[in-house]
Amino acid sequence: MNLKKVAVSLLIGCGFAMTATAQPAEEFVTVSNGSKYNFRIGLQALDDAGRDPGRVEYTKYLSAGSNVQSEWAVDRDAYDPDALKLHLSILNHLPSDRDFRIAIQAADRGGRGDFGYWQYTPWASEGGGWSGMAFDTDRFDPDAFRIRIETRTWSGSHSFSDFRIGLRVSDRGGREVGNATYTPWASYGGGWTGLATDNDAYDFDGFEVNLEVR
Image (cartoon, rainbow, N blue to C red):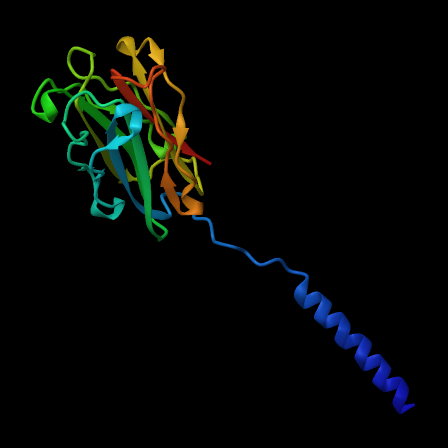
């Protein structure tokens, strides 16, 4: 009789153990809306088809608020670079109610004049997307580039759990567009895009960015 009780107890214990391990663990909690990442964006201009890099210029972090733009990114001689790269730098994962979009601008004369119009991606709450193409005033061989994160309180019904940023450049006043290159997803820690060049990797005329959310 005692042996039967022991056997029944073992079977019940195994059943409880299997039930306890049957529930999958969540890797992270997705917020219902707003950015869950505190991040900044770096922009780099390069010459000699991408072999001669200039300094990386960063925005402030998202948590700093609106209009957190970078300094002008130029190549080493601040004249007609051939390529751009973009860096998504993730500081930490903190749930937030902040909506955001990305703004870009190009200029000539090493960033001292001929400023083009700011171009904007759609807001993350709107599903993101491409900005317009940013040029200097004559739409030809700009020298300097900057990027900005703009924020507001989340107001849309669209939610997201992840994002990445795309980059591409154009030549011939925007009529010839190079291939898009993307950062890794924010959930993977962000990182660098590949090298964005036009078709001949020489003196591009404009650039645009993509805020891709999922």
